[in-house]
Image (cartoon, one colour):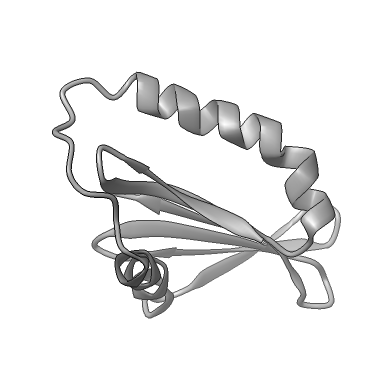
Length: 106
């Protein structure tokens, strides 16, 4: 479950959660953050909203970038990737199951 957010037709960021309950817990904070981003984006020229194909290309594009992983407290692992268009982070539990994925446009 997740979302991708665009400002003036340009993809800005997105988040994906492994469970609906985690998404619900964080939704209000996520919505405030993206609303603040939109309100503070001055001078953006409005374009048509991104198509589903453009959103899929944004998400898939960073998947081919080289991954870097490091251990975090609580037996978690964070994986990061960077492409020419986006940054990507993925939080995984010790058994390898992902909990949260984040996509941020450059």
